[in-house]
Image 1 (cartoon, helix red, strand yellow):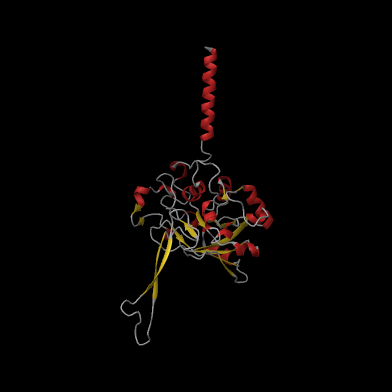
Image 2: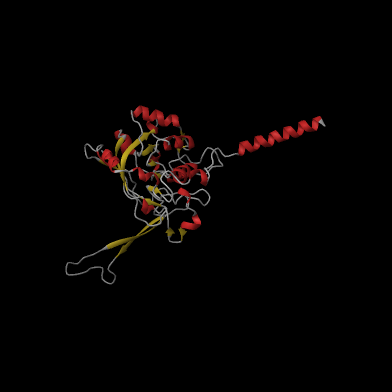
Length: 321
């Protein structure tokens, strides 16, 4: 009998150990724990609310030479695309029946773009992009706001123009490499070390951009670029979010490490930033020029397209200093 009891205890211990090994390392907080957000019930702007007249003035004071550095990628059919997404531009000559108008012989051209325009190229993730089950930022529910024509709440048109202090954290330089390895998880120590090396500190309302060097693959090795990428993990994301940023961006396609070291988790930093904390993500940025010039602080400007009800927007952000 005693031997049987020991056997049952051992079996129970093995089951408990197996369950613990399978337990996810992070789960999104419940609706009751995260809603309403600090911005109030019904808010659709999240951390964009951090932009105030004084913060704009403070960011403008960072402009000393007038140098403009473009941070957006060129959209074309040869760019890396996440699985299932596409981009096709078709030239269209207008003025059917003649193509040339008036005595001045005016000609005209247009184009038709077939793409997930909110999720290709340098892309700005909105709050309708990611949910926890059917619950989005501020606990808006999918069945209440989703329509075939887009979302009635949390559409990307709510963001508007963002003008704030930008800070680039050059993790690749801190690690003394041109490009972080595939699937490298950026740690809190990496972020702290890079900021210390740059003699920089984060402030509330910053646009925090992380240079991994992954942009070196853009248009060169698209298959490798889209398969995985280095990026922040959950601990680093929580550390950054505690600094109260306006947005988080990177030169890779997801900002976070992909795949996550825990194979049970799918894009948890997206849920942590977008769904839980209302912080936008900005992906596929062109940060090589900032890195080469060691331009770590600047005025940052970005504005998503006014796509009513969209989950995101292709953007062309700039750094001005």
